[in-house]
Amino acid sequence: MLIGMVAGETSGDMLGAGLMQAIRQRYPQARFAGVGGPLMLAQGFESITPMERLSVMGFVEPLGRLPELLRLKRDLVRLFVDERAAVFIGIDSPGFNLRLEQNLHDAGIRTVHYVSPSVWAWGRGRLKKIARAVDLMLALFPFESEIYQQHGMAVHCVGHSLADRIAPGQDQTVIRQQARASLQLPASTPVLCLMPGSRKDEVQRLAPVFIAAALLCLEKKPDLCFVIPCANERRREQIDGMLAQALLPPAIRDAFIVTDGRSHEAMQASDLVLLASGTATLEALLLKRPMVVCYRLSALTWALARRLVKIPFISLPNLLAGRELVPELLQDQVTAPVVSAEVLAWLDDPERQESLYDAFEAIHQSIRLDADQQAAAAVSQLLDASAGEAR
Image (tube, rainbow, N blue to C red; front, side, top):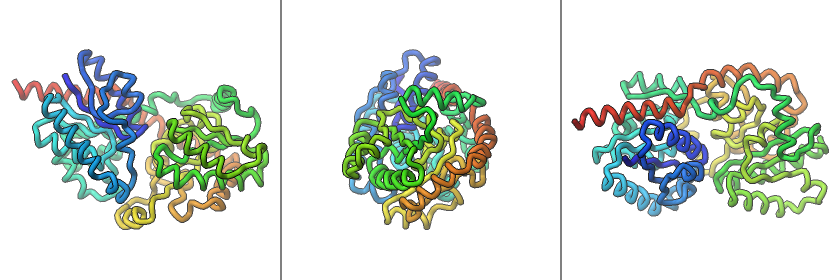
């Protein structure tokens, strides 16, 4: 039995790997193919192209790679139709996956979309397109399920697998000390985790600002230490190049520790996380870490987004809370002076940091639903229904 999957982001790779494991418990002979990352590959996934080829952000940026993306979609349609995939599961990346799902749905293949597109942000007119392309929506958060139910669409809220993997109610002091020891970070000085994103263009826009803001923070707090976890080798080269271009004196350069991966430990070790908006903000919430969230797009994409987006917040902690828990800096606000001021304000206010804990803990409990098994069970029900119809 062939199960098609396409994941275009690091977060999708994690969800896909967990889902593969859970599906195999029900269908041991299942074969998985499409596009996936290293975690999925480690589970035996057959990827026809590197996952990073799908990691394109924004409205305008994908246009330069449109011929390549169209060829990839055509190759995937041919693969799944020729081999009669039992089901296709598109994991996030809605710009690519919803179009692919429409083609496959029209060809008679059952389709599942894992991670609801932000219909609550872009307007609910998009629901009609989703309904035509998707047999089942796997939503991460309860408020998303309600939107699909109101429109009579098949949806299952599975929670988030990160919430399952991170235990609630832990002693954060002990965890911080253990993580610092593991990463060989100072035990008693303030540590700031810098996470400018996993995509090349995202890092290009945010990392220089994060580094400049860190240097301004060092002027006020000379004992600060910075840890920068890199999503992959290419991002490591990119970050190392930026630090080299800054021509930092050895004593200051030594304050920046760059790691290959290990973002989870880096956040655990930190007092505060400065990061790009995305799944990492949810991980920081689950680890109970204060954060400053930054969001910066190309000028043209931002101009379009401002006209279309209909929500008061862009970060998951604030969206899930329905109020501002953490500061969000958008576009022109993402400057070294503004970012450093927000960071220093948090570091200088321990009571403000502590005030987040209960809110973060409540959100953690609400989305800790055994996501991998929930998602696999929902896919299994769809497959069983399809088999019944075929008979």
